[in-house]
Length: 509
Image 1 (cartoon, helix red, strand yellow):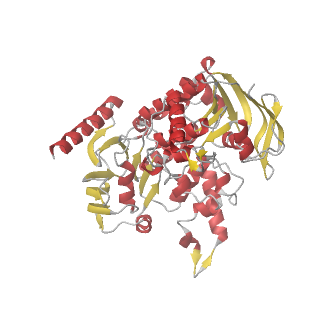
Image 2 (cartoon, rainbow, N blue to C red):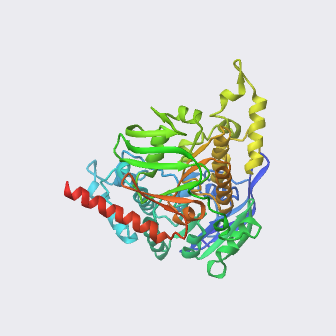
Image 3 (cartoon, rainbow, N blue to C red):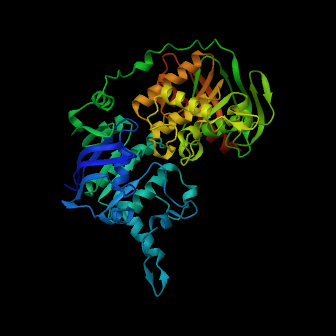
């Protein structure tokens, strides 16, 4: 065995994140690791990466115990490389510079041999089926290209075990398929892959074996071909979860409700959003879909006041918004669930309570005196209501799983009592149960006469949760479909047709 963990424990302040874990990895296998948020997946991979120190238990590499002093340097020396969901790259550096980062540059007569470095990187890229412009800066690359740079960097250092943490979270279907091809090439070269994801369809299609964790403990390790997606959900949750249950939720009458948010001919100053118009009604969830670069995120940012607008109008319940800003948006009852929670929605060093009440501090202050008791009580109420897995209100947010951090983000929004929800990929990198919780929460909000604008790259998800789906392409709202007998092909055809029209318009100029 390449890697073996025996009776592995990790605890934080007496609370076990991992308990008695037994897990093995073979050379050249793709091994899936799944579990609900807080199951212990992140803790395990951080131990392998030398970020956390195990509390007890044994780790062996090719039958030899891990070094007593084991940190990130020792992990890389063994041949373990972790590619986290958030890219660890220097934006201003080129792809080539990032690939060689941390490794000695080849020199001749004191001069760096750039051509030699480029040749070595290109050979490895060709071997893995990666096509990249190595001179291009990271800041100019899309998420898929950045992922390829990190894979190349790992493989240039004789990587024996590559750990991929939610690798397709920000990728399109086409980009994800390219990544799968690269992973299969890694396997063919004898590199083991630990594939950590909440997307069970990827586990079923890609992995050789899969390990299920629940509450920090091993539930099962089995051959992927001998199980099913439904069985994995059952093992993860400990309960029977009916697939497709959300499809049974009655759709809202799209002719009912009043206009909560009216956007007319909106354009952003950076020209990403171009003459976009839509009306979002109370009592329903309006989904929004578009291909990569369509301008969906930027559209929400314009409405909320994060991104500067250059034209068009925004009306909230019939009242014009002259100059949108985040502070003003909160006051007007708009909640924004952004895509990048780690950088933009959660302050890792702040406690659960501090993060929840960040937008609501004034509510707990009277005559300049802050009521800590009231703030803690509100936070505890949200912990119970949203079933946030944490040790209490004083636990730092950085210690929570990604899914529980997302629940904290929703709790922060709920405390402001919003009437309009702007949600950008709100279920990205969360487990099945948490995804269903978020859908249920937003459906409840809609039933209470709130309005929801829901952006997702997962078309299947939108068809599950939305009452209507708006298609965005090249910064414009192209069409709005009632979600009645709607098929994925209908949405995708509209997207591609809009792209072709845009190309023809550009060519005619």
